Image 1 (cartoon, helix red, strand yellow):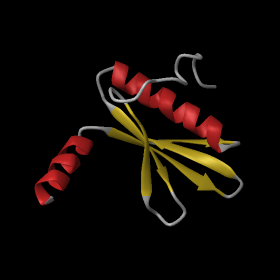
Image 2 (image 1 turned 45 degrees about the vertical axis):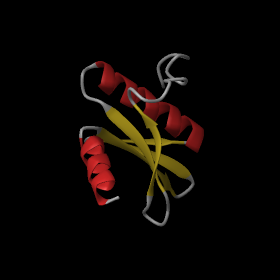
Image 3 (image 1 turned 135 degrees about the vertical axis):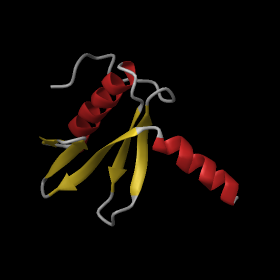
Length: 93
């Protein structure tokens, strides 16, 4: 079990992390040194997946996580593992 967790941690460390978190009445997308404020969770998710997809396409795999109000993170999307459904609709604005 400990080996499995260590292996998972190593696997996750090769990804750039894009975080979606609630910010008062809006949602914040944090990526590298960028912060983007979105009106709702759906648009934040779309932007985050678009950023992760573009990062992965340029050679840097990325994953999107939702940071809950209690500080815990929940994986939402991982480049190379999940279908980029929102990317197919065009670039995020």
